[in-house]
Length: 108
Image (cartoon, rainbow, N blue to C red; front, side):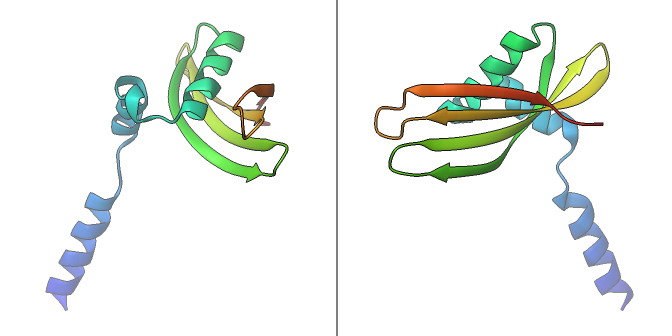
């Protein structure tokens, strides 16, 4: 019983990825980001120029014949204050031309 409890505890402890590793992945490994994640980061940094991107996560996406939409949640840091923004990208699925990018700050 104690052995099983110790194994479960170790699995729980090792399964969580610390925040600084996620941030490092966003900042250092830009090649692993998709094209649309990079566009979302560029748009957020254009609107909030003096911020650092802490993390990015895809919220949802929808693809139709005439329009595709992807939404991402970004956690930004400005002067040790974290806040979230939602970046929604609308584009044509055949040509990948961007129709519109909407940035909305997360409600607190």
